[in-house]
Length: 211
Image (cartoon, rainbow, N blue to C red; front, side):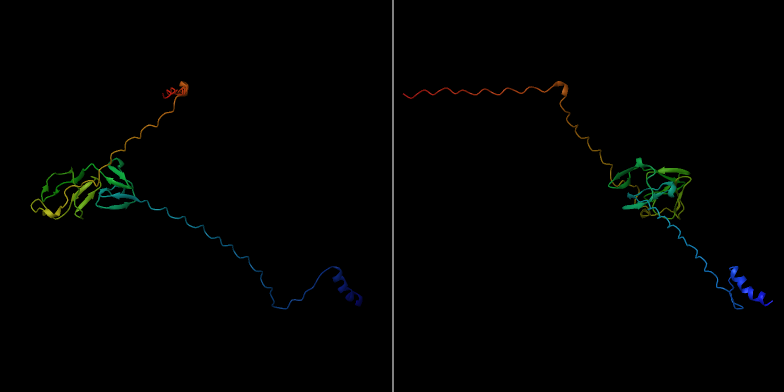
């Protein structure tokens, strides 16, 4: 019996086992967790630069941008090109409206000089309306309707419409004359002319001896 008890440690060593003593209530620390890799989102693309088209003087506004008439007198910028390039002159980087001078009005409205127009429905005049909230642009007619306080029996003063008709800022310049054609080279098939012969030396007569 004693031999069996003494031989147990040798059997354990022979089997390659290692016995560790762990105190009661002890827990090994947890292994550190791998930190998540934070990927930054790609930067937002830069906004496209706003379109800048320069105009000189009043002009029509395309229907896609509200329609109507722009009253700016001097150079100014818009984010759109003219809807009718044939009605504009382009010079020095500016678009200038050159006509036609036809503006649509709907129903009755005041007239330049203190009068009143009695035409019903859509019709045209060769002047644009004054600048004010009483002139409402109607996109279905592509024209202006008057919604102000004046009536045929209560006409506006003459000063209400100070500018009866627009005028172009400048006339379209005449096209430059075409340059003169470049002189053509001498045709090779005609050959080169032979050079002129050298002039013969001039023979002066001998002087007569003095007497």
